[in-house]
Length: 64
Picture 1 (tube, rainbow, N blue to C red):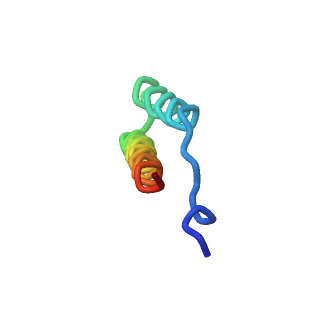
Picture 2: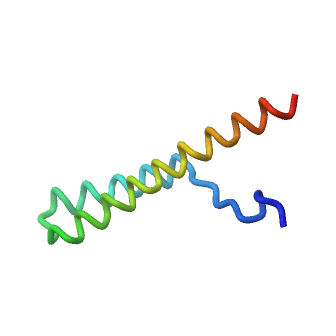
């Protein structure tokens, strides 16, 4: 099975949605554990998207 078949694409919209949810919870007085979980999810998405960008760059560079 190719790696691309297992890939989940993280979009800028995914990042914005996660950030908005985290900020709304933080600013809306949600319990600290919920705020932390939302922040952790946001951070994971940012990191996953950064990895995606790096993988795409390497794939394009190596295919020349």
